[in-house]
Structure formats: C-alpha cells, structure tokens
Amino acid sequence: MIDLDFQELMRPNELSSLVQQVMYSYGCIRRAEKPLRLVLTSVKGEVKTKLEKIKGFDSWLVTVVVRK
Image 1 (cartoon, one colour):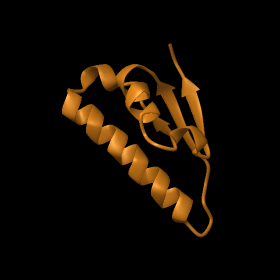
Image 2 (image 1 turned 90 degrees about the horizontal axis):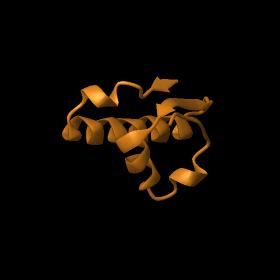
Image 3 (image 1 turned 90 degrees about the vertical axis):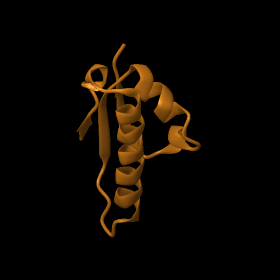
C-alpha cells in the first residue's frame, strides 16, 4: 500500500518523482514471481492527474482509493 496523501507538501519535481516511483514499484510487482496486489490510497489532485496520463494506467491491476 502506498499512501499518496502528502502531496500538498511536495514541490512539482517531487510529485513527478513520486509518480515515477509508483510506476517503478508497479513494474517490479508485476514482474515478481509471486506478485502482490498494489493499493494506492488518497489518490487526488496533481498525482491523480499524472497517474491518469500514464499510458495503460487504466488497465493496471491495482486498487485505487480516490479522494476528492
């Protein structure tokens, strides 16, 4: 589980880095011999926008908890 609730404390370059780290984590999990289920919590604002721009994000095997 990755909690994304602290994005308002991050600068734009840190937000981009966070999204890249989520992408990397997902890729590692998917390639694992025994992959686990990834859960992203507090998906909102700029992080939500950046994740939705990732090609194929809508088909990731991940549980996304969206917060308005």
